[in-house]
Length: 130
Image 1: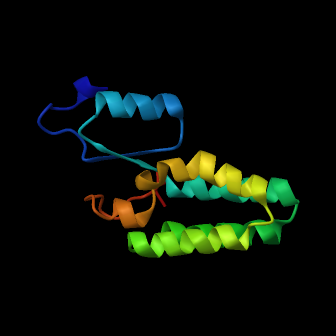
Image 2 (image 1 turned 90 degrees about the vertical axis):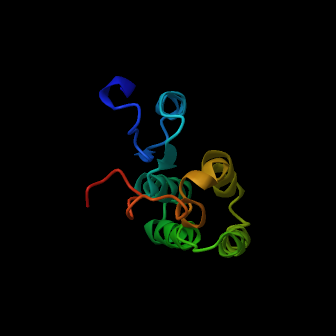
């Protein structure tokens, strides 16, 4: 893939889903590019996990709403505050919190606005065109 690009003009940002083979390939082939994860795919996965765990669509929508408030925090301090609120809100859902922490929060610098807003990405944060 790197052969398709002029070595002096590699992409500044690459957005993917959380496919580990792709993450490793991007990190290796485009090591100078900033790799971000698609916020839409993450939100859909969080919503799906909440819905599967509770069998409650409205609960899942509430979870993803709180998740998005956290993801779109403008500053790192605001993100930390919203993360603590999220953890407190769902303290009685340890499986959901463990999923969030082990699956997504380990990649926080690849999708949370407070971290990704430091990269020139022209507002892109998803792999979708709309």
